[in-house]
Image 1 (tube, one colour):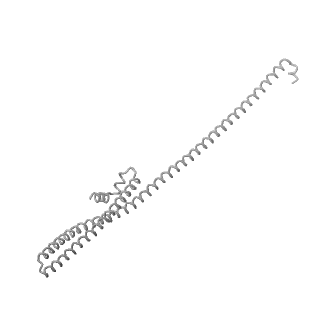
Image 2 (tube, helix red, strand yellow):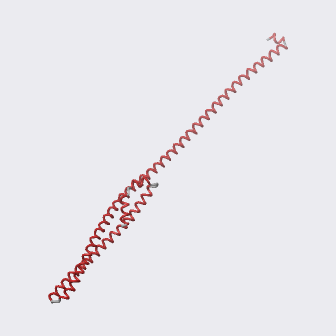
Image 3 (cartoon, one colour):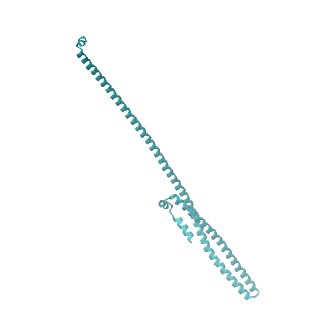
Length: 224
């Protein structure tokens, strides 16, 4: 039966192997569960139909068995009445119904075997579906935790990156401030040297003017 072949394929499937080869394991899990649920529903319907057919066959077998017994009683009555022709006709009907009952008995055996096969397939597929659901729920939870971990790591990385950038900016600012202070200090020192040199130059110029003045006025020079 094509249905049982499909069920057999699902039962033989190795979930781990399928998930390892899948591009999107979570999507594959959901599809597998959906396929199994659909197949399980079909098998359940087939089991119900097989059981109904089995009951119908039992009913038909019983009807023909009862008819065969009834015609045999009629044949006995005909014999008692010395009606051999009627007895023969009744016996013929009885044999015909016995043959039909035997045929239905064989069909019942076949139907019972098919019903049992469908029941076993249903039970196995039901267990497989339960296992697949559990495995898929675990896988989906693992994938979600993994994605959450990746996002958390990315967020921590971004935060650390921002922190490092802030520290770097602070260090750069401090370095610039230190450089500015050093430059200001150098400028102040330069101004101080220039001031001292300027003072010396002025003092020297004053002395030069004083000598020139003394040279032009000897008397002032002697008095000093």
